Length: 197
Length: 189
Image 1 (tube, helix red, strand yellow):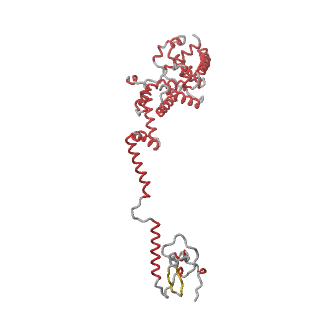
Image 2 (cartoon, each protein chain N blue to C red; image 1 turned 30 degrees about the vertical axis):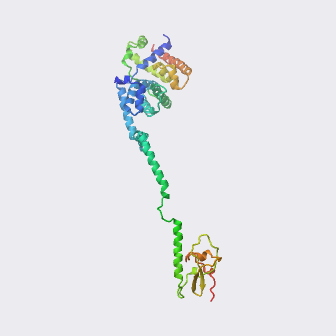
Image 3 (spheres, rainbow over the protein chains, first blue to last red; image 1 turned 120 degrees about the horizontal axis):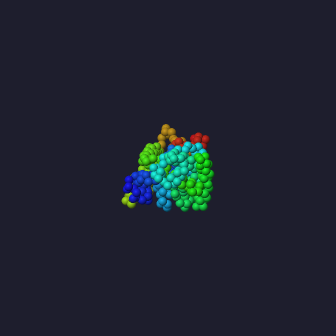
């Protein structure tokens, strides 16, 4: 398992293009968590995320022979995931069912969580779950385009330039979408905080 | 802490969301199952194309195989080009065979008619001495003229300068060259 950490993406891609299917398996192991996070934050549904994830990797495997290495493999894979997710969400419309995933155990030590929940109820698990749910609901109220930039910038920590390349828009458009999305989320969560007091 | 900062911290916490510890392995297994299912349900022509790309195409692109294939194609095209033109030495061509057979038939007919008999009926094509058309280009070497003389049939070679018709020179073909009765010359007794 530690062996694939030393192997670069470009080498794994070349081996896959040569017909080595196990090299693509290593790529799947490497990027499943991040692609899953992207799709889940757009759909907020575990089953839909699972299906989309399989579709993304299937499409990537079929198209990998056309990958010329002009961008990084992750950027290329991410673009596939973004396009397929946007198409899926737009087709699904507003009919969705929220499902919550478990949070990793490391979240309990996160300083942001500690500062957020210290003023809430003593039961941190309950407040954390509630916050998670409310944030997911607020995210789903955003439009697809705004939700995507929030997911890529705020959740996955991607820079504005990379987001603009993947989405095919200018950096200014990315920034303006982010600004608008943040304002919307503030309004949604303000209502929740007022109601919880 | 401003509301904006609070929002951003909340959003950052979402990166801790994960589907479970074994999700990656399960995703991989599911991916393999889908690939196997897709292979089974692929149309035959796609499978054949994939096998061609994997097994045959690399061999075709090798220099040795390309040379052998090119040489074989050259041989085949040369053989196809030369085949119709190949004829054994001394074997006459088609048109010469027809002319010689026509001469043979004419000669045979001429021999048969040298001894006419009054009791033997003459073929209709032999009963006319009329000329209908000038000599054509394809006339055999042997020329003869049929004369009707009270049942006697004589054959003579044409005199120099004499006009010989195609009907007179041609070998009689009773079915094709037979004249209708209305065109036959009146027999004078």
